Image (cartoon, rainbow, N blue to C red; front, side, top):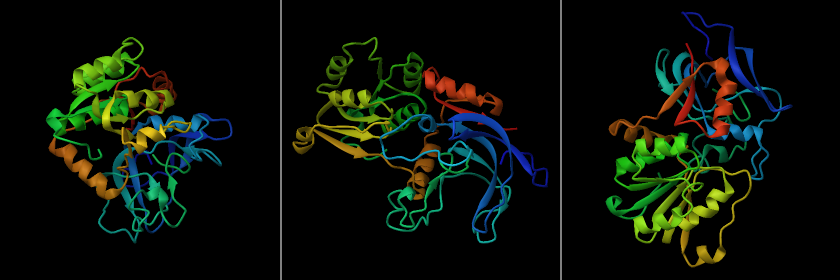
Length: 319
């Protein structure tokens, strides 16, 4: 909810909603929802736009079902203030500030939930902002002598650079956007390359690092970007799959079998992992570069993200 409480909850609020029928976005007035006994109602202060939100507008072959049914409120990254607490909820009270993970209708306790809440054994998990309303992994070697490439230096990528820098890794940023590369350097990247203008960037990376990067984190949704990322790695290098392209990825079976490269997933979307991340962020003063918008400017945010000309993250700031 984003209306003003003033001691009493409003009955209406405005929201940026996606309509699956025509894949459009509109600012609609909708009711403030009632909560169940095990839920919390939050007055949203800020909500960011993630590149994953653009997946609603694109066909995909990744086995993801996104945006079915009637219009729903977009966004799955937000923070705000608790304005109402369900009778079964423990440990939270009105007035507290919090952020949260966007998965609902899961148990949080089963074996599958310990991997990701989307895999809950109940089979009913939903992602807020994708189907219903809303709002590092281990790397090898000594950080000071370990090179990591970050492919895609936008909203998520510039944060990856900041975390890697805090750990002590040496970093190379790769992006097609000059603005994103400028943000990569500002976030701590030792070198930054644009494959469009630096045609020999792979050779340059190999010369800088000796034999190639020890690991590469790809946060893009581009299949070609993943294909070229392999060439950045040295023997037995780690490719971290973070971004989700709309089409399947393919890797050489020989490369995997002979351990020329290792491919790993990157999943920090469970509460225990998130707690560690938040604590590390606090200890190292890691904050994102955020450009603020008003709710009425939401479509402008979408267009700017699609163009790739934004820096860092973008978010709607509510009054």
